[in-house]
Image (cartoon, rainbow, N blue to C red; front, side, top):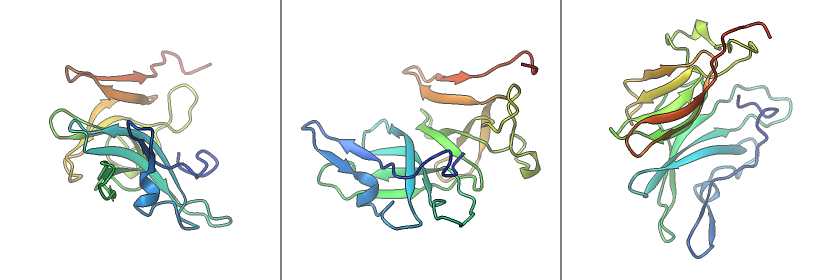
Length: 183
């Protein structure tokens, strides 16, 4: 969830160079600097070529007495070299849902976890996990870099977490599977 009680704002995306220098990438790209547009970031994943990275970021939702729906969305950062200009771009993706844990697939696709309804019907949202009956992600999804051709790769009734790609192209992740609903 992206609301402030679940995710306090104030996190930034940094890079640390071999000489120990730290660089605040989100601030240099203009994110998280204005009241009402506070940010939190999570789970960066560097591209195979080392020149760009994906990460999830939530923007806003921290203004007192202002109720607005905010969601984790996938962004891509480039200009990672110490003398390069940083650019952060929000990727085309399913809106109105939380898209987290993004990473680059071996086939040019972007993979991520999301609470997007598995049948793409908003009436089926949110998915409740099969044990605690709390909102969870629906599994691992895949899309083209332009946001098209969104497909579910693995449906997980109680969520899929921390996916990574192995050197042989397999996707490794944690998944909850429960055999009994009653605790």
